[in-house]
Image (tube, rainbow, N blue to C red; front, side, top):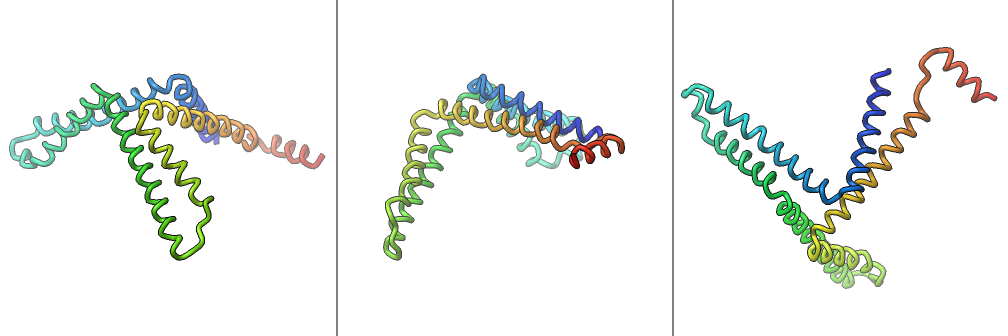
Amino acid sequence: MRKTINYFILRAISAILLGVLLIWIPKSAILYIVIAIGIFFILPGAISLIAYFTSGKEKRQDMPFLFTAIGSLLFGILLVSIPGFFVTVLMFLLGLIILFGAIEQIVTLIRARKFANVSIGFYVIPFLILIAGVLVLLNPFKTAETLFILIGITCLVYGIMELVNWLKFKTPKSPKEDFESVKMIED
């Protein structure tokens, strides 16, 4: 029981700290997250290479394993060495996906006019999505900062709600406390 409560508190505090960091320094947080992802590629690549070269010659038959390890290591090194480039590429891809999604929705609505009455209100959201896609393409790094601030706010609210829920709904620790809580409810 006590470990469960500590888990909720730890999770809530972690979410609050992450939220504060993402809101306070979103530009740095973006880069550090990409660097952390790069490290997560470097570690298995390096471990796999070490395991490959320390194993006996009879076990070194698996060349795809070697190429995967080298690829993981090189990709991790690239992520760590030029994280801003990868953030920009990722945001451009996100912008293109949003843009093409909006265009597809608009085309679908235009085609639907052949079969049904489509009012102008149905076009509002696809056009807003289209504008969002264009904005992401025009300023990808600022968009990433805004996105991370939004994620930070979400983490902060989640952490606070987790603490509130833990405080409000924690179970009594003893039968005496249980009896007193029931008695308070009856009053």
